[in-house]
Image 1 (cartoon, rainbow, N blue to C red):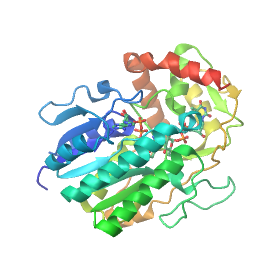
Image 2 (image 1 turned 135 degrees about the vertical axis):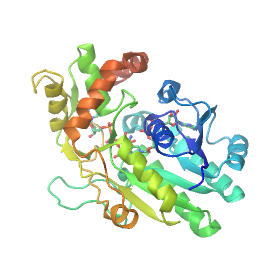
Image 3 (image 1 turned 60 degrees about the vertical axis):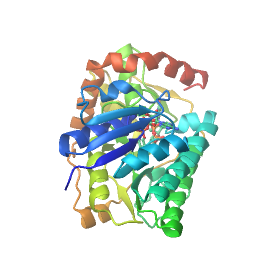
Length: 334
Ligand code: NAD
Ligand code: DAU
């Protein structure tokens, strides 16, 4: 395939920056990153990438003029930018509406004007949650039933994409992925919060009883799936991305403690999240059968150990955010 100019929104965030590294390592494509650099964006996540392959533009996806200019130069667009943290959305939902809904609308209008291929990154949380003892998993046919301000704005953005495909012929696809882990994840999120707590001598914090189940996938596996869909996904289709990585939060916190050489019970139970989704689980058969994708990081313990090692070696990357994040959580009893 000929080298493309990809526009990647949110490419200085966790999963977006992992995708930019993946594209540079696995294709000849050139990348323009459009990122507002909110508290969650970090330019250091793009350090070491070749300047003749990756260009950075600071800006807002809701800025129609800027978006128009960047779409005119791009062959295809991969849209990661979002307000992404459930706990923040319970505290202050407004930025979630502005970025996740109005921002996505702005990109769709540009895709329509310029007839550009767009891949929209979404989440399994649009489907709500499953019971702990239910063997069911989410599929592309599961009805939308989001629980939080975050997941409801992501659901709204997915529905906008579907409407722009059907009404205006926009060439878009959607993927809904489960919980990612790996390098460059903000310390507000569960796994990096606990790792950096241990590194700082703070006890890890488990919401409620820790029975909630998340379906973990390495961010690099998410990236390879997105590239497959961008290359060969059928326009208008949704693909679920998951790696059969269901674990309850208590088991994950115990494994982090064990891998970091501490007793498995050296953590605190803290106030539960309001409306806390019980269980997510992805059936990714469609993606695997149709596009031949499969995950490479099958061993969660090995992936987690490598992630712990990354945070150990990259304290300057995460240290500037750590105190503010812990002050915010502690003001909520978490
Ligand atoms: P993140 O919070 O780490 O990064 C988001 C990035 O978007 C940041 O760099 C931020 O600066 C940028 N951004 C925010 N508002 C912007 C705006 N208005 N204009 C331009 N840039 C803006 O998020 P993440 O965890 O990397 O998630 C990326 C995407 O993947 C999101 O769409 C999220 O819904 C989706 N997703 C995340 C997960 C997960 O486990 N983290 C799982 C499935 C799907
Ligand atoms: O499922 C995909 C979603 O995964 C993405 O759409 C979101 O952007 C991403 O943030 C993530 O959402 P979660 O709410 O599942 O992730 P978080 O890391 O915030 O929490 C994971 C689980 O751990 C959840 O059940 C809450 C719990 N938790 C979280 C924190 C921060 C704790 O027990 N203790 C904590 O300190």
